[in-house]
Image: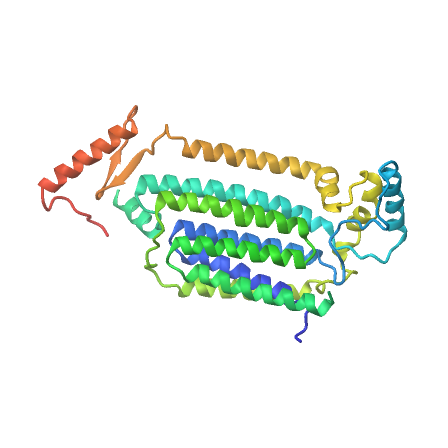
Length: 141
Length: 224
């Protein structure tokens, strides 16, 4: 198999360029926004790739044993936390990129909503969402 | 699941993503493009699961594949789903994209290898979160939740401010009361006068259209 050390980053760059191409080469404003979304998703993939550890697991602390008794569930959970701190063999992926990218996804959908409402208004005023036609009509004025 | 299987799934999903992305660019039907964008989001959610980012995965599946698709479909209902053929050449954008991609690939030479536990990103505060969040925050097993809501709570607060701003913008743009300053219709611009309602504007445009059709060969479009 090909060397895997950097493959993920290269594939993500390819996806990023696909989105970038849609953004700069298409005239349709909705298509541009879809391209922007693809670009954004690829940036998220890049960050999540930075956080991945080979052989690691999702950053959700594994409680050894599990708590059956509801009376001292808190006690059991506390013990479990100590057990996790002491046992170094469980490998967790890095949670920080995940947190940052959760924020990025939500902000991304907010910008998409704003962009789409601009598209709706542009369509109302110009009767088209093709950028070259919009420029032509602007020059005709 | 062994590590090589994870890598195979990873590669397959990335190839599927590339195919979907190129299909989005090539299609001329915006409805198809929106659906493919939804598929793209869902596949990327699968990729996030493979890379251990389960929280990112379900947010992407709900927000990226769900809400974004609904927003795009609502827009298509208002603006139509036909995309016209691009008038200009696509060689320059292709050139820019290839050069930018080449520079970025060149930049990856400095990135630490994928998946190594010794990478600098995993050393300082990340290790602290994983080891101590169980004790410090209280019995929350999900470290992402602890970091999102407690250690980096200000980030989340700023995020809500951004969403609020975007919401205000969307409401201002889409509120039915305000009209654009001018509207392009039947070959020329109509000024929207103060106090004009939407119905007045439509009536005026129809009047003018009727007037134009009587005066045949009047002012067409001069500069193309």
